[in-house]
Length: 238
Image (cartoon, rainbow, N blue to C red; front, side, top):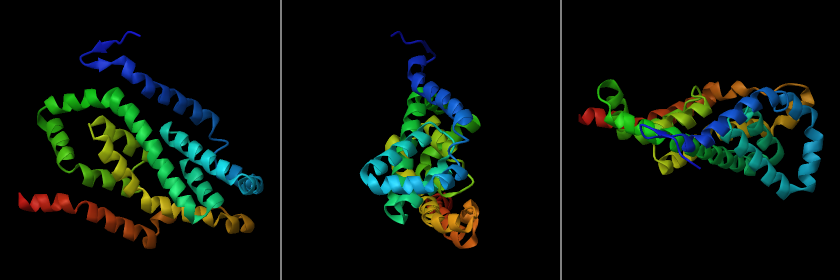
């Protein structure tokens, strides 16, 4: 297959990213009515019965679905996190959720990095002025900013997956900071999911805003401050 290039840009490398974009658009219009809280509530008994009869298959299937949702930026990431807690409890549900989210993030990172990231990173390396300073700042404090993007709930997950890829972040650094950074939020949502049985029994809906509760958000903000410590120390040294 011929590769079309323009100023170092390879169309062939873009094919995985284009495929992800197409699947994401289709999924947005076709899956939003299926991957929601109501679907989980209405099918909870069947899901629990199937899990009890096929625990290994249920575990593998859940992990595969979660990875696909993250990798293709499909709707329902919060619901699948709750489902992990509902089906598998806090443990191993949190392990499944965090591991699957990390794997899906790595896949979309790789597609974006090899499709656009290398090209854009070279452009930024050669750029001067504000763009060059931004790239230099990211390179100097890469780990701190990657952890911060994961820890702060305000950053959409797909944004935290794509931005590092487009500025030339190394895959290894992206992978381990993602795995570490999503632990607090992953544990919280799994914990909420593990209590869905009682929520369903009362006829209520889960409070997904619990992560903004001061008792939860406080420790997360403390971790954010900790992740910025190297940046602050460098500023003082300068």
